[in-house]
Image (cartoon, rainbow, N blue to C red; front, side, top):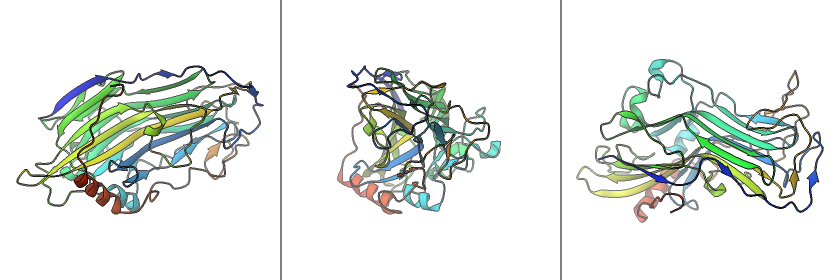
Length: 369
């Protein structure tokens, strides 16, 4: 039986308290910010952690955008339309799951409910002309379990976040905000139909008994007996993001994004419990950080995402930054970081399964309980 539970948790719009500036550090709008301690933002379309133990599990982290050192923006290319993107990522993620990121070729190939149009994602990390770091990630997300074996993509879809939007803005120590929203949420319920469900404006959505497999099949498991529990919530802490080591915080940090936690209860044909497998995803993870003494420079633009004033003929930097005289940090994060960060290949799926056999499923509680 599928059961939906909503609980009050973290507010979607977060305003961080003011911090007293030690010494106002006014910067010139054309001057580069400090790479290690200056204002910075990051944006990631989707990343996955396999296994409940970050120290021993695996992770698939897609390309991460980092704001440049001078006013400009870094935007994810439109060639990223799904996770996994290639065989290397598929070997890491496992054969069953797929995350669609908005774009599809024709209606018959759509993983979304009828009426949701194909679209490009918008994933941008920017440094405004005022040196204010902002970031935004928005698209339609669809999580598919291809282990269901249905011919139409939408018949394998188990979760849809339509019009998902996450954004952060670090205008000053007392003017830091984040927001995580979605126009509609769809979940495949006990009747095996993909239906719209209510996502609380500030809370979590819990669904139990989903007819859903793990990313990599558990040996001897029976898909007809295996079920999963799903918890959808908003990112409320920096450590909840799934990120590379170079994705840093600062004295003052804001974060946003959708967090999806799946606990799969694998059972065999005799309905005997085999193991529990934990999978965590962050969809549209973004953050921005500033020093505690940050003061915005005089400029002509601020706001979430790519509102930077661009020259009439944008300068294209090989790393992907846009903007006049944009500078790329030496530890540029927009290199191919999609796979192999914490290990390799099918080992990730195997580790997740082994961990499931050693541990009971992690209890997921509402934020603030």
